[in-house]
Each structure stands twice: as structure tokens, then as C-alpha cells.
Length: 185
Image (tube, rainbow, N blue to C red; front, top):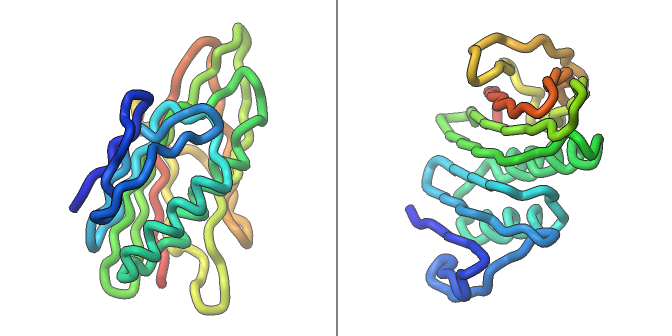
């Protein structure tokens, strides 16, 4: 296991034994990323926008680690957050923490996503969370979405390429949502 620590004061980080510079994303910084075998743990904090650079970083990391079979999960999660961003200037994505475990022919993802409503009015925020669905990799066979604080399960609709749910955000509030699923690889 190794850790990459990025921040405004960090000048150089070690990446798989190589030195590389800090990677800014739309003026924000990765706070930390941890990757381990056979699990992948990714944590991104205070990142207001994800860009194709984020996806390229994940692909580069996965190519370097070669043994990771579930990199598409990370790319899908990055795409999900990208789709969510910009939906409202009042509702903001604050952070995510993702854990992917490979067990036999299955990948299990557990994600923690924090959102914030900075406005004075409640926001009903529709969210689409993409899931890979191909002939070789069928759609996830179990999906759970719940409020991390109250443990209340959130209703969602399954589609061909993912799930949709609505996030009800009170004024000037933060909410942490946990999304977990299992998918055959």
C-alpha cells in the first residue's frame, strides 16, 4: 500500500517510485488518494469539479498497477460526479471516499459522497449514478443507497446504465450519502 498526498504546499509526491508534480483539478487539489491490492481506496476532498484529468489520472494509476480489474468502476464514479456537478450553484459536491474490493468474480464498491446546499432554500437534486452494463459485465446485482447519518434507505430507480435518485437538501445543510453495489466482472 502507498499513499499520495497532494496539497497547495506539496511540491513533489512519489507515484509508484517515480516523482511527479502536484495535480491541480480546476483550481482544487486532491487531498489524498490511497491505492492497495486487492482493494482500491480513493478519497477526494474539497474538489468542486472533476475533469478529464481525473479520469486520466485513474487510468494511469490502473495501468501502472496492471493487476486491478475494476478500473472501470473508478471511471464510472468519476463520470457520475462530473454529471452531478454544475446542476445547481446552491448544491455542491464536497467530497467522496470510494472503496472497491475484488472478491473472486465480483467487485464490491462502497462510496461515501458528501453534498452541501449553500442556499437559503431547500433543493431537490436529481442524481444519476452510472453503472457499467455490457455483454461481458452485467449490471450490478445489488445496489443500496442510504443517508449515512440516519441510515434511511433512499428510493431509487434502476435503468439500463445506472440508477437515479433524488437528494433532498435542506437550506444551509450538508448530507452524506452512501452508495454500495456488487457487480460481476
